[in-house]
Image (tube, rainbow, N blue to C red):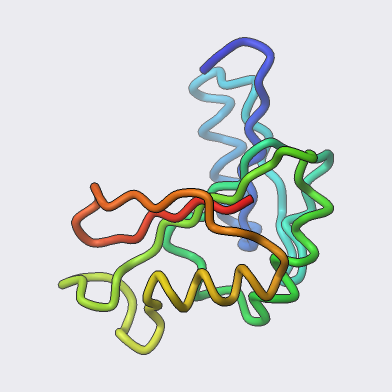
Length: 131
């Protein structure tokens, strides 16, 4: 990781935040800062350039409101990258908790984002980048 960069590792589970703290300490990752997220906000201590959400999009209850509020945690040129399971993936959460790329794009558009890039190199997941 580049010097001077900080990674806020946000999770809603206190036990996972504790695990992240211990792992960052054991690996001497002084630039990894575990953060206890809430259901309505990631609770980031300052704006960030990139928010990466991996395989958890379906866990957010009110996604449009959540991502609309997330804008406060982004720098002016900040982006949101979402990686989540495709509907036809042989593994992952139950199919009813999976989304098409169009569904994710529609919700993100309602929250005020635009799709900047779609990557198709992951065999089981979408990889979408929004600004």
